[in-house]
Every structure is written in structure tokens, then in C-alpha cells.
Image (cartoon, rainbow, N blue to C red; front, side):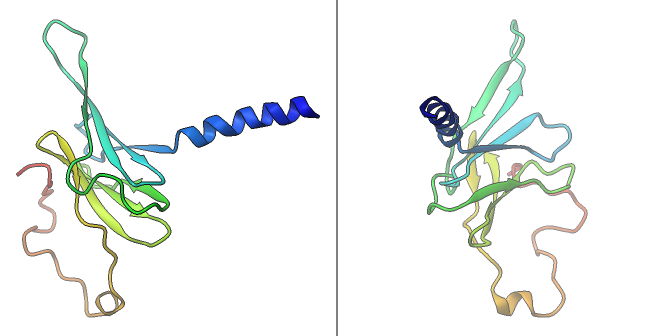
Length: 143
């Protein structure tokens, strides 16, 4: 009985020690993976890069503006289905808040966490964002 409890305790420790999820960027020609800490919401990213005279390197981008730890919650990453989008959505499953995260100037940055207000979501038909034309494949990683 004691050995079973110890064995079970050994399984629980490692599961709690690595609270990360990994999701690839939706962009089909970009070899980038985003990582999120499911509790703090901190986002980072790594990708494969070519380097002369080697088999390649792993390029990693740490959390920059808005991508650092947030209020503790239950966070995840959701990729859009847009094949030319290099960014990813950070979602808080407890609050419903979302932000967009992407690599900019060798750091992962995220827009502020937000959720649609009741007045906005029940208003008239959605309007396109003025700075982005539908179907252009605009990507926030390109300044």
C-alpha cells in the first residue's frame, strides 16, 4: 500500500512541474512553435534557423511587451486557420479574455487581454478592422 502511494506520488510531481502547452504558428512556411505557461499565461517561441557551417540552430524569442506573466488563470494558445498568419491567440479559459501574440524585434509581444463587451457583441453586423483589408493576409509580425 505504501509503495503504491509512493509510486502514485512520483507520477503527480512531474505532471505539476511542467505546466506548458505548445502550438505551431499557423503560417505554413514558418517553422515556429509557441509555448505558454498554462497558469501564468507567459508566452515564448522558438523556431529553426539556418546557420552556415552547421546543421542549423534553434532560435528562441523570450516574452516581451504583454507576453510576460499575467494574472494567474487557465491559459492556452489557439492558432487561427490563416495559412499566412505568424501570430497566435492567447486565451484565458476562466475569463474568456483573449490577446494576439507574435514575434516582433526578436521578442514575443502580445496585445492587451480583452473580451468583447455585451453591448459590442450584440450590436449590428461586424465591421472590418480599418487598418486590415479582408483577405490580404496581413501579418502583425511584419512592421
